[in-house]
Length: 270
Picture (spheres, rainbow, N blue to C red):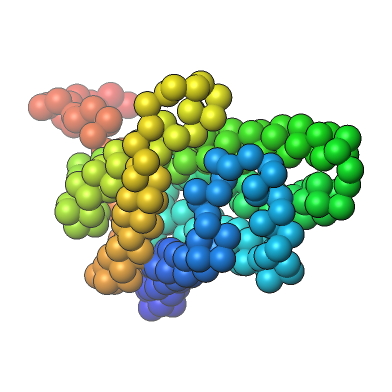
């Protein structure tokens, strides 16, 4: 009975964190968009971004802080999900879990730049002379492309999509969650992938860009994560030992079946 309660508690915690993380991040991102014109402002030059950042004051820094750590909440349920689904021994899901967790860390680095790196650059740019501004402009571009475009957006988003696509395929193949969730996960992941055009255009001028790719892709992907949390919360409780049974069954297909008569031969062999 204790094992059943622990399993249900883990399931409820995982589902609540997926749902809560998606909703709180959406709220923080909406506040950031309304006060700082994010994410459109990310593609503006330093002479636009840095003065606007200083004008936002301390409240803008705290908004970035909240955006970063509400997204970081997803790290915990991503790590817990294999156990909740009873597929801890599934090597594919285990690898996807590491990929998804890494994507959250990379995105967190990209967000927290605006808390620990950008404020000093923005103050130096606004208060400095022409020489200082030129130097800060170069420093801003370097950290923005490395910490933002490369780590947070390109690698962070690609790894997040790798996790969601793999999980969706597993859902479709095993029906461990409703199949519509797996099918929807593939669709929203494809939509979110279109945002890579906007990121690659920062390094490859003229790369095709779909302006709505980032907005539609990130919004639908966030809603899918919230739906994942709801489905985990609604998942039927399992009896004690069910998880271990599912773990064993996930690998049963790879075990050879005994041939007819083999049991009799084994009885004759001392």
